[in-house]
Image 1 (cartoon, rainbow, N blue to C red):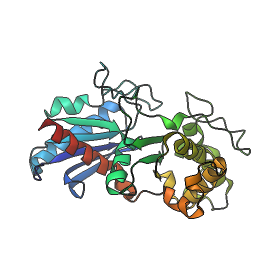
Image 2: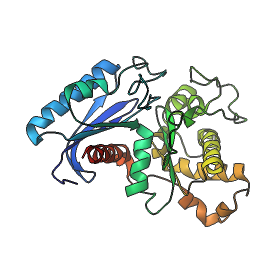
Image 3: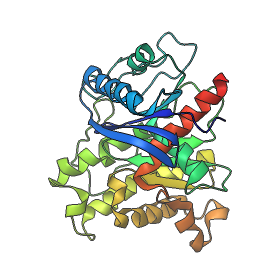
Length: 301
């Protein structure tokens, strides 16, 4: 691969978009953070960043775009590259790749934001040496992806919307998902913390009930992933998981749900390796986008 190629990378989240021009995952030449507004305004600002960056650094050879979803990722679909129904105002049915495609005549690889982070952690982070990995992001929304991905899925995974059993002390909270009454994202994402307790997780003491309540839901997801995908590692990232106290609660609840059923996990020392924080930290999503761009460029050669 030509090491002099320049790659455009976008990590698109519900709160912010991070754009970068890079030569490799470890060589970021320039980056910018763009607040997530409606689709047209946000994507146009991304295009402007890359157009200006090209004048300073040279032509971009390919783009990698890891975006929040749900997305139509079926290449044969007439709606490929469009957002599907989403609670995010101004984004349902938006053409996510259209503005980039119209402005730059280069390959564009699109995937979900969590899939980009999963790819990065698998190849360069906490999952190096593992045959498989699941990445879960807990922030404005909740998403999860498994790598390597199954061939020709119906659509990308939407694990943030799995139904979960209520925590005994959480029966009065109605949930925030407009689609499902008792789904994971509606009960354990960042906005639910603010709605229940009027503040962020970092402002609450470590013995607060919120840690047990959130972990009870996230532990259900981890148990489902372990049982259905049998991955070698589960990485929990995202803004909510930046609080280091939460992941220990997630391990405990996951272990409780599985109750010794998966024998390879019955070694107590295994849990800290099996459910862990991202080795790449907040850089996982953008790193994955660079890797996507490099793959897109390679496929065109």
